[in-house]
Length: 397
Image 1 (tube, rainbow, N blue to C red):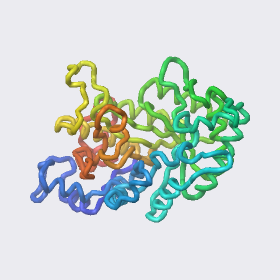
Image 2: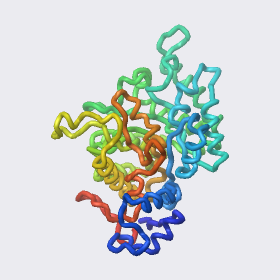
Image 3: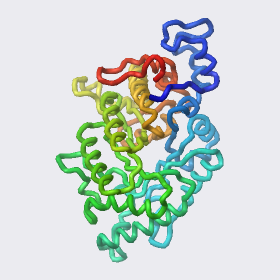
Image 4: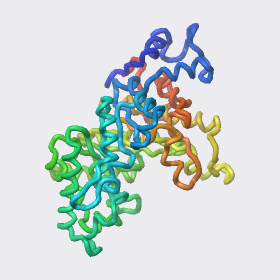
């Protein structure tokens, strides 16, 4: 198992004087996590440096954010990988069979190249955020399977050729597994309706044929739920047996702090790694105001509009700590962890008609929250974990 190393500059200096299991706190190191000294200390830690021995730390961004100086500085400080939140999806690029608009995506990729950041491509084949016209001919009629594959090949050739050598991996197929019932596949997807389940294999083969050097991922949400994990493993096992070129799985990780299970995360990492696939955490956030447990009183279920309470921040921090202990323990099987947003002021969860949410490590003013301090602290080695989740050993292995 990979040995944990602590690399952030000032953090290393402090750690050299601290018992990493928190039993003794020497003079000069504040014991109070909420003290000004501790909060200032946490701001000296850079996420991407802190976790550099283990995996990349990424964030989802828009080209607009890259033009705002304070946001740009924050991104460059804490992240070494970028994912386009929207501007690499088909609806942002595809115009017609003869023209693709790469202007927004190019701005993101150029920023990454200028600053030495990796870029994940997201996404090529998805039932959502793909123009309806992609699936229809000039008369508005639904395309045949062969016609749709021909259009997809033209589109993927344009995209993969344009970004060759600039984007190191792609989420080739996104969210093709059903959430409901015994069926494995999302049958109401226009891809499935026209092509059947074979569109998944065809998309991966096509991408590999166009660019044999690119890393190819299947990406989906809910992959730490037992039933969806089972369906996804069944699909991937069949594709791999047929020689389909798949290199990894993206676990989207839109998690709810009231329901998150580190045991199930561990089981999913095990299941996908046992298939010989790389694992990436691709869209991480930890909702504070999501669906609440049914035993809570009705008035407690109403989402707060303006902020999260100290109790909620503490629970969120504990959940993040549990998640990152599992991730670091499995660092030899995980190559990248990407947050879906840069701060609570820039999260898709606050734009869903359910009030504000606060799911990330930084608040709306880009200040580190308790969750940030928790996952970058030596306390990560002693966070309470449920039974059945192997712990990081005291020697760091």
